Length: 301
Length: 269
Image 1 (cartoon, one colour):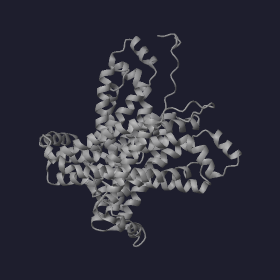
Image 2: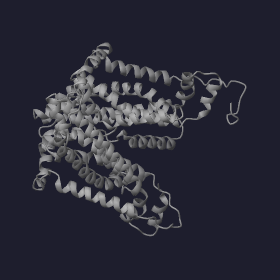
Image 3: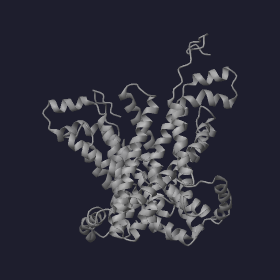
Image 4: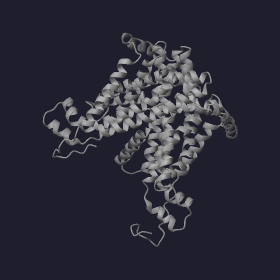
């Protein structure tokens, strides 16, 4: 990506590049010119944002006596995310084996990958609204199940990629020693991929905390529900408290989980820079797999 | 056994058992118990949950077949979803560029700027897009504008984070060359760093756009414009066949945008 050679080669044809750029400009122009946002309202925008910010954090100050309840509802979101991630991890691990070219055939792995891609394409909030809220009603369970199902898409894809990158030696050894197919996977493949796969599970847990905070907005439990209620009843002091709790808890868990992921991939001790590089790599591949780095409905996955 | 993995007759000695593994597993069990217990957590009752799921399957049957007659009604909101994603990607990715440079050790003018920028980014990252949308809807009332604002923040968080990590890893050679020839900080960034990270920047921006399409499809559920408004309406009135149609359309939109994005990434990068 950043490799530069000293001698400048002949410039390749730029035609498709120009066409692509032109199309991009057209789409942007269409979007900007026809969107239903009134330009004359825009000058009032900073004022409106400043007003709500003030009412949330400054005047009156966040309702500190509400902290206990706010923290409790955030913990519910964390629990939803944790259990959802476990569901996703349990479902995705076998699928990842079927989705790896070197374990099954090219045909089977392609089909499994396409299914995983389709799962990834539907945001968890939609899975909750369309599948699990109608099935099990409102509350924490539809949120947990939606997060679990949605996580299968990214986790399955990433784990399959890890499995494709294994060293074939232990598999051959297990086969030569007379291992049955399941034993070969258990002793030849699983130990090699487990650290990275567990690191992905943890990463997914971080993302799912954000997802479960969102799911409350559609009645699927957790801190989102509390935030919607406080905004509906214009209790901005409570909304401010909730936002502070969400941000602090999310950052704390991100930090702890990030440290743990580094430890797992690094295996304890070892050189720091290597671990950092691995971390970046995992982060990027997760991001590009739709692992969403920012967190959110669109995010990820 | 192949020759590459040198065969050894004697079994190597077992490494000493580490306590970290079992301890980690215990912590895992403890958290899982905490999250699923009746007193502290969600009170997960697996048999009942499975019973609910099997009973709920009948409700899912009501979704079929999708109602194609709603398609004309969905076109306007679908277009608005695309508009929100396009505008938010454009503004968000543009703002992310300078923010990313300030958030990298390589290009940030001083440690204070670097730390403050990093801190603000991780705070912005901690709130998910739909919660931003909720807050902006409360401040500005419903419509596409709160959705656009929410996604701009989301894009800044994603693109600036990824890009600042890329900037951290640039080849220092051109930087030294630019500095040696007397370039100031801005010129160094422009001519020594930007050309190196530009392909990544384009790739991240396209990636952010893909995420934005998915996000803006659901932001309407909280009133922030686009197709999500219709989702909300249909689910309130239990019009499941219409709902299924909308979901199919969103799926198609997401897949088509992904194809275009992959094609563009290949052409532009």
